Image (cartoon, rainbow, N blue to C red; front, side, top):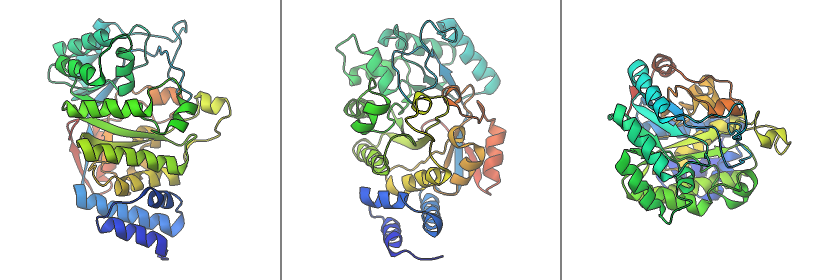
Length: 362
């Protein structure tokens, strides 16, 4: 394989356990051909050292309480206005029935609670929903209430993020969904989600959750208007938070699904990320985020085949079954609403690796 001294220096630095800089991360993202293959191989070697040969997955279900939302994020195809014939809001009884069915028929261990920002949602509502879920499935792990959702819930109170998450934890929230991060760079957020939680607020909220003992995921949504440097700056923010709190259980790159979103339909962008970028996003996350053990690949965003490939490029987790995944589907994803545990195991065993069903927080 042809050697490139610049790439070799960066990869050797990573192999020696030294932390990569933003400029080095940017350089890795520019790679093609033999350079790309070297990065993939190095990331896979690092994955093996950190977590071994097991590939994990969780049996979970998404529960979207409502698709009505006060925001108008340019990357979203899920939101509906209240007067839309497609708008809905689940009742508490419907939530409990869905949970009971999912536990009994699908044997889920995790419920991923995510929703549009309905104008009537407040902290009391979220507390009511979580308590209702726990009343019918006390052992079920409730994962959700993003920093954005909590900001919305607290908008008419003087409570801090810490006080809000403390109440949610007491009600039964088990871990926090680290979405709504998108790209944690103000320039990008002003273009794609100007109404949404700011970078500073997101950081404050996620740290508050961690300090209360609520673990969370960390995400990036890439492949729209951000630069390569802004992707790496986002990773640096995640790495710095983890250095302080040790609260992230995993990092999840989420490729932007563009087809049914305003960003695409209004001509702001003409495509999403390429397969090369997707593979590099996983590999660079493994090398750059040296303090996060688990890198998840999203079969919903990448499709099962590319997701399987990224399990050889640094990822060690295949995510969840995601029964009833709707948000990516509404944005234009073509990969279905769920995979069964048997299908996930098949993808893993085809790589001669070891499937392991996991708990939400590993």
